[in-house]
Length: 103
Image (tube, rainbow, N blue to C red; front, top):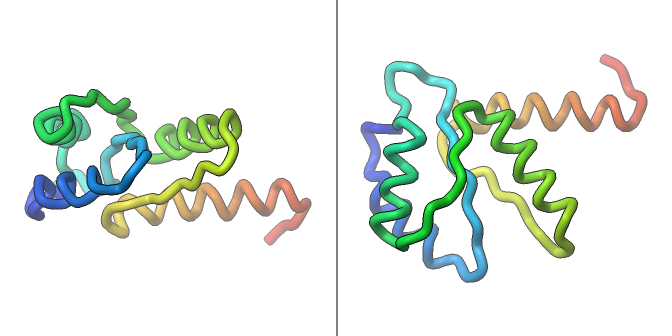
Protein backbone atom coordinates (compact mmCIF):
# COMPACT_ATOMS: atom_id res chain seq x y z
CA UNK A 1 0.00 0.00 0.00
CA UNK A 2 1.31 3.44 -0.85
CA UNK A 3 0.70 4.68 2.71
CA UNK A 4 3.06 2.04 4.21
CA UNK A 5 6.86 1.97 4.49
CA UNK A 6 7.28 -0.26 1.46
CA UNK A 7 10.94 0.66 0.93
CA UNK A 8 11.85 -0.88 4.29
CA UNK A 9 9.81 -3.98 3.41
CA UNK A 10 11.65 -4.28 0.09
CA UNK A 11 15.01 -4.19 1.89
CA UNK A 12 13.87 -6.88 4.33
CA UNK A 13 12.52 -9.10 1.55
CA UNK A 14 15.76 -8.79 -0.39
CA UNK A 15 17.49 -10.37 2.61
CA UNK A 16 15.86 -13.71 1.74
CA UNK A 17 18.48 -15.85 0.02
CA UNK A 18 17.76 -17.19 -3.47
CA UNK A 19 14.45 -15.33 -3.64
CA UNK A 20 12.80 -14.19 -6.85
CA UNK A 21 9.99 -11.67 -6.80
CA UNK A 22 6.92 -11.09 -8.93
CA UNK A 23 5.36 -7.68 -8.41
CA UNK A 24 1.67 -6.81 -8.68
CA UNK A 25 -0.90 -4.42 -7.23
CA UNK A 26 -3.47 -5.00 -4.49
CA UNK A 27 -7.18 -4.67 -5.15
CA UNK A 28 -7.65 -1.24 -3.57
CA UNK A 29 -7.76 1.69 -5.97
CA UNK A 30 -7.43 4.38 -3.30
CA UNK A 31 -4.47 2.99 -1.36
CA UNK A 32 -2.58 0.76 -3.78
CA UNK A 33 1.00 1.39 -4.70
CA UNK A 34 1.51 1.22 -8.45
CA UNK A 35 3.33 -1.97 -9.40
CA UNK A 36 5.87 0.01 -11.44
CA UNK A 37 6.66 2.16 -8.40
CA UNK A 38 7.24 -0.95 -6.28
CA UNK A 39 9.35 -2.40 -9.08
CA UNK A 40 11.47 0.75 -9.01
CA UNK A 41 11.99 0.33 -5.26
CA UNK A 42 13.34 -3.19 -5.95
CA UNK A 43 15.59 -1.84 -8.71
CA UNK A 44 16.91 0.93 -6.46
CA UNK A 45 17.63 -1.52 -3.64
CA UNK A 46 19.02 -4.45 -5.62
CA UNK A 47 19.72 -3.43 -9.20
CA UNK A 48 17.41 -6.25 -10.33
CA UNK A 49 14.33 -5.69 -12.47
CA UNK A 50 11.68 -8.14 -11.33
CA UNK A 51 8.62 -8.80 -13.50
CA UNK A 52 5.45 -6.79 -12.99
CA UNK A 53 1.87 -7.92 -13.50
CA UNK A 54 -1.02 -5.48 -13.21
CA UNK A 55 -3.44 -8.05 -11.77
CA UNK A 56 -2.82 -10.35 -8.77
CA UNK A 57 -4.31 -13.41 -10.49
CA UNK A 58 -1.96 -12.98 -13.46
CA UNK A 59 0.94 -12.68 -11.02
CA UNK A 60 0.06 -15.86 -9.12
CA UNK A 61 -0.38 -17.75 -12.39
CA UNK A 62 3.13 -16.65 -13.41
CA UNK A 63 4.48 -17.80 -10.03
CA UNK A 64 2.75 -21.17 -10.38
CA UNK A 65 4.15 -21.59 -13.89
CA UNK A 66 7.65 -20.81 -12.58
CA UNK A 67 7.19 -23.30 -9.73
CA UNK A 68 6.09 -25.98 -12.19
CA UNK A 69 9.33 -25.49 -14.15
CA UNK A 70 11.59 -25.74 -11.08
CA UNK A 71 11.76 -28.18 -8.22
CA UNK A 72 11.72 -27.16 -4.57
CA UNK A 73 10.28 -23.74 -5.25
CA UNK A 74 8.00 -22.15 -2.66
CA UNK A 75 5.57 -19.35 -3.40
CA UNK A 76 4.87 -16.72 -0.76
CA UNK A 77 2.26 -14.02 -1.22
CA UNK A 78 3.42 -10.96 0.70
CA UNK A 79 1.28 -7.89 1.10
CA UNK A 80 -2.07 -6.73 2.38
CA UNK A 81 -5.34 -8.60 2.55
CA UNK A 82 -6.31 -6.60 -0.55
CA UNK A 83 -3.64 -8.59 -2.36
CA UNK A 84 -4.17 -11.89 -0.57
CA UNK A 85 -7.95 -12.16 -0.90
CA UNK A 86 -8.28 -12.43 -4.70
CA UNK A 87 -5.30 -14.80 -4.85
CA UNK A 88 -6.69 -16.96 -2.06
CA UNK A 89 -10.08 -17.12 -3.76
CA UNK A 90 -8.44 -18.08 -7.06
CA UNK A 91 -6.36 -20.83 -5.44
CA UNK A 92 -9.30 -22.26 -3.50
CA UNK A 93 -11.50 -22.36 -6.59
CA UNK A 94 -8.70 -23.84 -8.66
CA UNK A 95 -8.12 -26.57 -6.07
CA UNK A 96 -11.85 -27.36 -5.99
CA UNK A 97 -11.81 -27.83 -9.77
CA UNK A 98 -8.82 -30.18 -9.58
CA UNK A 99 -10.48 -32.27 -6.87
CA UNK A 100 -13.84 -32.36 -8.62
CA UNK A 101 -15.45 -30.71 -5.60
CA UNK A 102 -18.31 -28.28 -5.98
CA UNK A 103 -19.68 -25.81 -3.49
